[in-house]
Length: 312
Image (tube, rainbow, N blue to C red; front, side, top):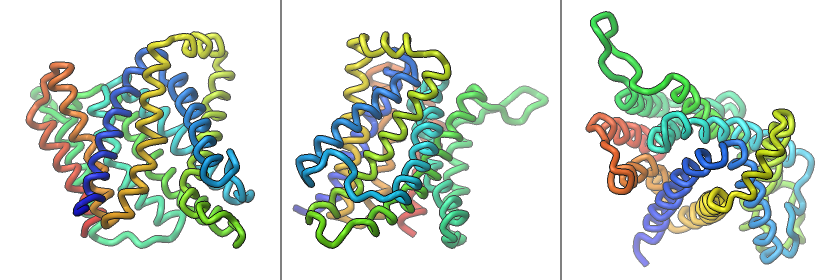
């Protein structure tokens, strides 16, 4: 089938749009901390079932200490810090702006790759960063009074949380890349043939386990166990958690891996990053919210910056 990879990539973008919308709902319904710990715990269970079916073990078999160390660091940065910022960003400024800040993940990943892995930063990468930042600036800045040429049109707290989410996602991706390389090196020659294909899922399970443990520790430190029990008993809230788990770390990851098998990775990555565009439609047609022209322009400019990272 022609363009199968591109079609799958668009499905992934739609899947992550659903995730963003229901993460927004879950955060408002049961709280961002509880939504995160329940999402990651449920994702761990689903991934365990998948690994048991495919490689015969319901856990990340063959992972050595180095793999666990780097993937755990990735989970703490990407999930505990990054997703905590993202879900609280949803509470402050909503999913449509929160997803806009996620276009910062590629620039921050490039900077982290330069710092951690010694990867070169070309002038094209710097241009892509500038374009992405310009798009976000168009969306969140507006005219001020006589003394201020420009001002934030969003709460500063939400903007800072959005920046934190982008940093966490980008840096966590680089740490995950290192961890997966160590994991791949630790797999013995006699491992099941499917293990290579299941490596990203096994790595994701490590990240999900550590991320869930990190959020649970924060809940304990904040004496939030009674709230967690209340969240688990909230049927509507748990429905939101189930939906965002299925469309996020489970289905979204699976389809994203499938997409790059059928098309160029740059094209797939750019199409999968269309979530900030797609998330605007529910806000217009379902929630009847008014989307300003500058927001649309800002999203498109940010998307152009993301495309520059992968397609130049």
